[in-house]
Image 1 (cartoon, rainbow, N blue to C red):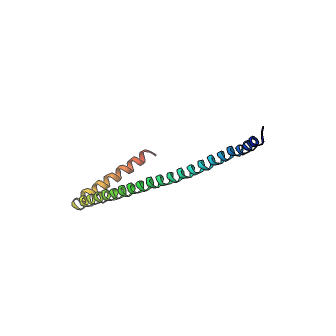
Image 2 (image 1 turned 30 degrees about the vertical axis):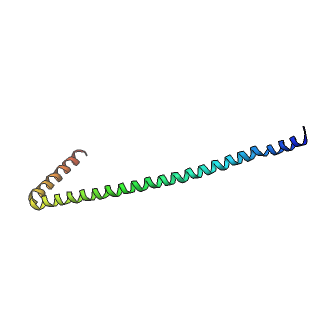
Length: 101
């Protein structure tokens, strides 16, 4: 083995370490980019879910208001019938609760 081959071989040995270090650095960079992508994607999904939740909440509030207005209208038109229905409902509840004792 000549001196030139020995020097070439010595220079070649650190290359695998450098290659491994480069691969590890690349892997770390890709992992960081993927983590950032996941955060971005998660953030977009959370924002979309928040918008959907807000829209559904507004829709439920409107439905609730319509039902309350409808119930108030019925009670105003037929107060005696509503009182009798409430009394009948309460009697049934009392009888059912006594039968379970």
